[in-house]
Image (cartoon, rainbow, N blue to C red; front, side, top):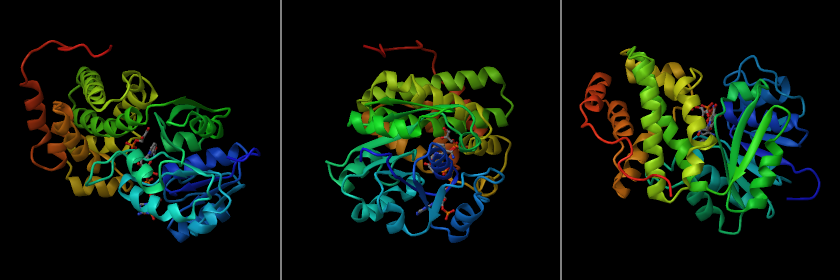
Length: 341
Ligand SMILES: NC(=O)C1=CN([C@@H]2O[C@H](COP(=O)(O)OP(=O)(O)OC[C@H]3O[C@@H](n4cnc5c(N)ncnc54)[C@H](OP(=O)(O)O)[C@@H]3O)[C@@H](O)[C@H]2O)C=CC1
Ligand SMILES: O=C(CO)COP(=O)(O)O
């Protein structure tokens, strides 16, 4: 990145892209937000509001927004991709030929490439080439709270420590703590899996199973995350931090979570189509549950909670059947094998 204050292009003008772009613009960086919906982009650029995704929140006057990807990327020192996982690969392909040669690429998308199950850092590395600095931005962070200036902590993981640090510096500010790490695999796994597990606690709460059930699901869900993480070669501490436990607790307990809200609706007996329509925003678990289970199967790791969520989301079992299946599992040691070193 250049020695002066870097210019930032944020790609994806939904709730999280808008919130991160607003945060960065408030920190005094030249920030351009790119989105595909002309009316929404006009409202952000001219009226300083994103009426569809963050209604009622005033965005900074210095935040620019455009539907022109070439213009958004022109002169960018840092590119931050914040589209849903199903749009990640096409967005990477679109930005690749337009990326200024020195610009590193970070993303705040949570999930895997749907269909192939590739980690997003694998998609980015294969699309952009191995010499482009990459980083993933993840952790417990509801867009509406960040856009409103409420205190938040998250983490930036990358193989290139200098690039991860420079991304963290752009995000870090009076109401925002950005930490760094070097474990993209673990960080991406945590962000993806917590969305699936949030559906489980949502279902339990929708069925009025009580607070004990919620705490049990969060803790055994963390155990599932830790076990799969070890199998894929992530670092255990990554998932005990913001990218794992932190985001798991937030999403499993906070009603701002779209994944938790889907679970709540299903647990109350609402139909899937209607619940998804009412939420009206991306619900990443709908793609991610399949990919998490395929990854677990490839590594021979059993994930009872995530597996039942996948089956509920497919309509193969009811929430009540999922509960029965979990409760009927055999008694065993809490930690049958050693998890940490
Ligand atoms: N919201 C949050 O609190 C957080 C979200 N995340 C992650 O951020 C990612 C983005 O989610 P979020 O912003 O919340 O989603 P939203 O549902 O709020 O917005 C989705 C955005 O993506 C755009 N989009 C969809 N498909 C494409 C495409 N093919 N090309 C370009 N743009 C597209 C939509 O455009 P259009 O309106 O035109 O359809 C919309 O602007 C997800 O992976 C999510 O898990 C991570 C942390 C926090
Ligand atoms: O990732 C998030 C918070 O960290 C947002 O969660 P939802 O996608 O479930 O709303």
